[in-house]
Image (tube, rainbow, N blue to C red; front, side):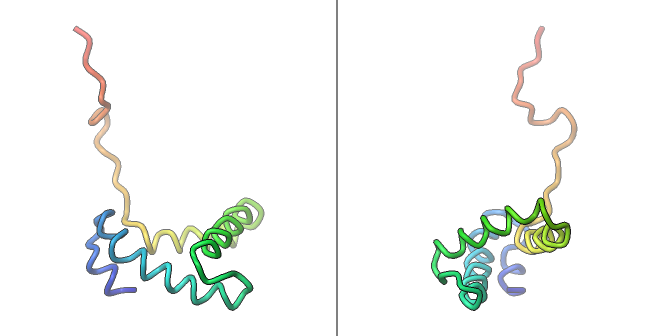
Length: 90
């Protein structure tokens, strides 16, 4: 997992290319021990279930946030006013 993260270099496209497949494989291996199928459908069911519990349990919400932080690069906001796509009125 660490090697995949290093290869991605905080680039979202590379994260999807290198890190997501490794993370998905780990998740598939783990969730089958808890009654979920170890295919894509099982991963989606597990993710939906976790999402539904996030609002009910602060510990699950915290753990989910930490897990997401492992897989997603830190996001930086563009400077204020940059990239708004609007055209200035004259």
